[in-house]
Image (cartoon, rainbow, N blue to C red):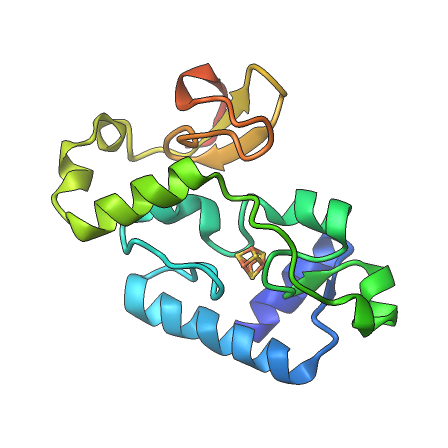
Length: 166
Ligand code: SF4
């Protein structure tokens, strides 16, 4: 997991958390979540245990790039900008960008494990596509469109298939 995270940071010109203890805890959290759910969901957020609902918070999450761009760090502080790397005192809590609609829908689905079978979204699963938000242009690679755009909060209906990856 450490190697995977390190490689991802290098490929995207990010740096890893300058607080070694926090870095170890976050990586341990990712390993635990991978064991528990089968995918490394964000160690700072509650996962539903249903991939359809958690796909936006599988690390690196869909909110990382905009958060590092705006605040110099992702929500957990696992990925940081060069500025924060050089001055760890800038490491601190940042606002949650994940829309409350998604958090609520995921929590509700997590309490009702049959829900994923009932939702129309599951009918579209099985192939990865790049979805484009027709309102702001945000791109997301996933099986189904994001329930809500993390950037402009447009609903899933406003997403169109930009590219089929499989
Ligand atoms: S907030 Fe950071 S640690 Fe959490 S999923 Fe996003 S990139 Fe990973």
